[in-house]
Image (cartoon, rainbow, N blue to C red; front, side, top):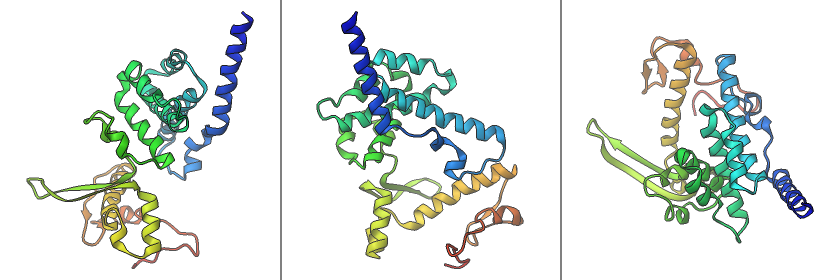
Length: 255
């Protein structure tokens, strides 16, 4: 019994050390920390709950050294939120795999044995870990399921286009690496050709997200004028594409 107690203490100590050095503050999941604006209080609370659930799974992966005890903690999460807990766990296990060259099978073993009901989220969580360490995604893709592997490459440099009503494949490009780092490198070099993807591509993709968000917040359909970058007959919606900037960090109306 004394030997078992000592073993349990060692496990607890190991989990505590992992949590201390790799843990994330729950505040990271708050709208206040992220600078997000919620359309209503209920939506804010729900989205923050999802973020906290992700961190719950992440921290469980750091603290537990037994897959059984880890699974017990995950299944205690509300059913409709469990997928986010598994996503966080996937990130935690993948981070540990990256940090411990003597054991690099945590993510794969857990995914195959316990994580199958949340197989998509397990791959997304793997992608978070790779992006956090800025690891090349290429070696991992070769070992992942050819259909599910793409879920792990969020944040890496690639784009594809489909043209016309028949959606024929258009220009595309794929680069390994971190998009944020690539953007900074291009700013420093002043060479547009160094970008993984044209900056206009990111701009147009972002506009679609803004349109959906503005439409949701206003509760009405928008008719967007892509040439003039305005919502037709809706100055209130158009004004929501920007905000009051803090001087001297002001973006001029014409760039």
